[in-house]
Amino acid sequence: MYCVRKVTDDLYWVGGNDNRLSLFENIHPIPRGVSYNSYLLLDEKTVLFDTVDWSVCHQFFDNIEAVLGDRTLDYLIINHVEPDHAACIEEIILHYPDVKIISSKKADLFMHQFGFCTDNRITEVKEGDTASFGKHEVTFVSAPMVHWPEAMVTYDTTNGALFSADAFGTFGSLNGKLFNDEMDFDRDWIDDARRYYTNIVGKYGLQVQALLKKASKLDIKFICPLHGPVWRNNLGYFLDKYDKWSSYEPEEKGVLIVYGSMYGNTENAATILAAKLIEKGITNVKMYDVSKTHVSYLISESFKYSHIVLACPTYNLNIYPPMLDYLMDMKALNLQKRTFAILGNGTWAPQSAKLIHEFLDNMKEMDVLEDDMIVTSSVKDNNIDSINVIADNIIKSIN
Ligand code: FEO
Image (cartoon, rainbow, N blue to C red; front, side, top):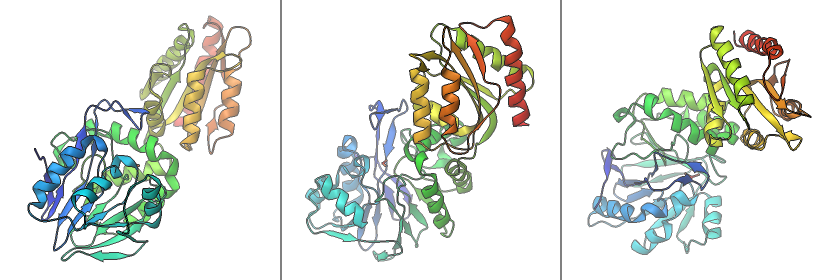
């Protein structure tokens, strides 16, 4: 049975939600599911904007058929070829054999690489090209590396809808809702939106900035992403978040403490430091156990906070493996402009603080505060001065 939502006038959401998938891209936990959005325009010609993941393909066709009625599908615009959006292209061709496909040149190549049998039905478009479907005219805007190189976004100059591909998406199923004003986004969605952005597109801040610059010249009334809610008001709120995330500026002054602890001693040091910071007036402090927290959450929080404390033992004369994983992900995702304090532990050859320091020295615009703290096995009275020094250094740097 179909489940569609009207976006505006002759535009409909015809996507689906997956609440059974555990890991997005088989990596990132999605306890609140994910939506795969697709949009159908009923003009003189009928136009579908992207398809959906295979998991919701059946629902997708129920939705399309309900909206089309006895009409056929004339056009399919492919903004992004990643299979969570493109998996149903061949099914579309089978159902609507005369459908014409519009995509970027690279998307055409990728569709062939994925083995989609698109025959000779593809019209390749590039930046600034337009297409008219009757009342509606659209402009194609290239958006390379947001999040794949073939990506583009499509702007409908008639109703102001921006079909933004992965940009402005978020984890989380819509479950009947569609618009940002039907939910308390800042309370219930922003953490998933940040985790989606930082882990999926975070590496490509420069390219996202380029897209934001292009978007600033458009009179956007609706942002229609491929995941999560459609934005129809308060667009500045989300554009501002994207500007911050893509320029690697922290959202908040605060301290993220990420610790790894084999027997509780490093955790003890991290907790004492947290208590000192809070006693001294810095209350925006969050602690996470690196061994128990999926790295996607740590990355998201790292994009949020201005200061990060890394605390872990030495393991095989190296950085504690879960901490090293987190650091490598942080580097891969290009995080910049953060201030760190480091706390290392070791029983006979403490190396972790030194090695973390060296790792951060090889990243862009990372500031590491002086006076790494070294614990030998467990925190003792003579460590308290060092913890106070670290707390004071952080406070001086935040204020
Ligand atoms: Fe939601 Fe890059 O695909």
